[in-house]
Length: 57
Ligand code: FES
Image: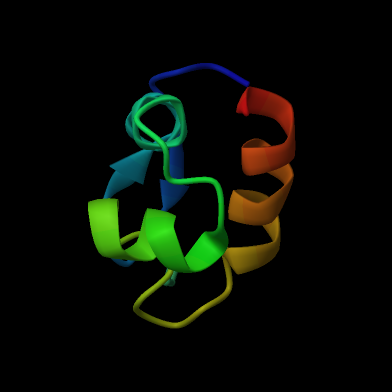
């Protein structure tokens, strides 16, 4: 995925920001939500966040 691609449109969080959070130790959806706010709006991006965690961790 392009690092500049917006994963969470509600909170405006990009794939790169999620990758950084995962690399900093946020290896669960909950931890990424805490670190980036991604996935805390409509929730529609949560599955994508989970996939990215698997990819980046
Ligand atoms: S798109 Fe991420 S919470 Fe809505």
